[in-house]
Image (cartoon, rainbow, N blue to C red; front, side, top):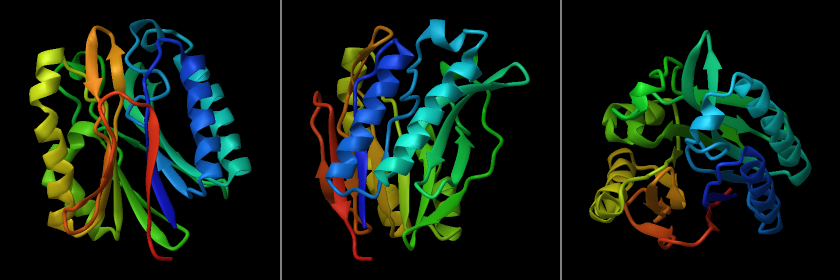
Amino acid sequence: MKLGVCQMSVSEKLEVNKNKIISFIKEASCQNMDFIGFPEMALTGYTPEILSDKNLNELVQNALDEISKTCETSKVGVAVGHPYTEEGKLYNSVSVFLPNGRTYSYDKKYPTKAELEYFEAGKKDLFVFTYKNKTIGIMICRDQNYPSLAKELKNKGAEFIYILSAHFYNPKEARWKLEKNRAIPITRAVENQVYVLLSNFVGSHIGMVSLGNSLIVDPEGAVAVSTGESEETLISISVLP
């Protein structure tokens, strides 16, 4: 089985992001990847005009429907981050689409202080799913700071934990937080003896910058593969069936 993550830049136009996600899914299929994770909020970013649109759910769902269809035709499973509203509240969410038509969703439990001005803390339970005989769990960015969440996924049977991230900071902060943002997924991998796969953005967005450094860590804490600070790319690891 071949598992990957996508590192990408984000546009303020939903259509651009959707098309880029679909293009990366097709590329992953050409590279024989079975499942890939995209960054947190990959579909829209944090663009205020999109998040405040009264038709947000319809816009997001239409795009997710196209992504889901691409997963089925390309035979690649994906985890893609996006917003949605429910009863007037905004959530930072992830949807998982598998080629067999199964879907799963989760909302970020621990938004940052800045996010809490806009987003509600998620109430959905953590989930794992089995795909091609491998069990995978998902969390979103700052959720990684809470060891109990990774442990819960491990206790549910996760062999692989995806962390969908959006490490946007002012340029100076982005630089000094690089080591912390590499250290945490490594720590979670060792603590739980699982693979951890972190996807992140690159480039600038809403006046901030993300320095990439997406990575895949093995259960012993070795960084099997990682990206640089500026390129849009797919990275992957092959594991025994």
